Length: 326
Image (cartoon, rainbow, N blue to C red; front, side, top):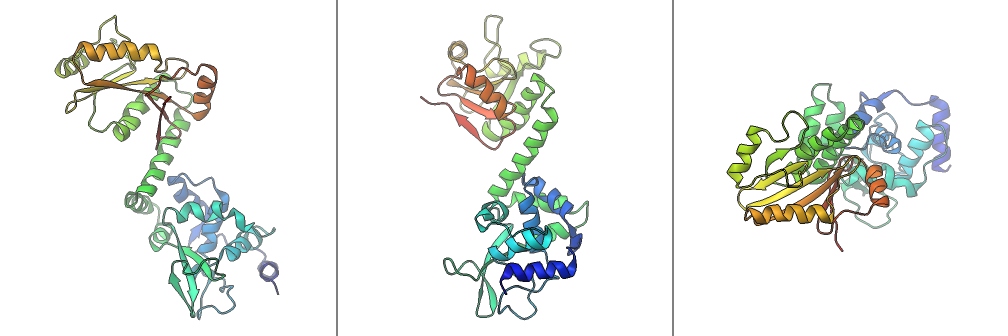
């Protein structure tokens, strides 16, 4: 009997799947994956649920004694588990594995293994082998099984242990912030640029001035910071949304946060380069920030005014920045 027929028969016998496997619900899986900006991928959620299945016997013809789906499952096994056993429909197309295996495999949350000589060994030891399989990483499994109040800290530590996972976590955090603040205007984008973009992409730079439209345009504290940095903003200067200074390189950096207008265009580069030269600085860099790709595309589709050799950062896609070259 073909695998998909066997799984369909099993579903008919069971009438569906339990709400939890190893004590883990799909809602819990989704919450964990959301931390890595993967929580909206339903195929991945269901794929992880399949890899927690320690109740269903392995579907290999000659599995290790007592083996379950959770011990190791092929792409075909997972496609049938998700599509037929869980959803009561057809098996998932194996070509879709890039959506329900690869995202977590790239982060080390799903491990590649192979059934060889009656046991599972690490890695895919032979290309295109029908015994190439997958299982959940033990650390991720422990996170999924941990109670509320504990799994969050365990997940944060697991994410910090890997650059790719940390980047996904940062991406998720900033995406959530972008969604929460999407209608909150210019001030919130400036705040995100200062608090999230600058620490990641401008290491060593100190904030001298931020145009938060709260009280005086330049506060006494900001005047003091600029004086210590050997620079000043006057009424004749283009006022940036945020101005930074690197003490070791004596280099300035300007951020312009755009919700309606105000990109770093050629005119602004000339004005603020003149400011840097006036005070003998080593140079000045520039970043234009947007809240969303949609807003960036709308602005640049119409105006195409971001200056060459400057950078663009998008709050909803925060783990990378883009350099404008020509």
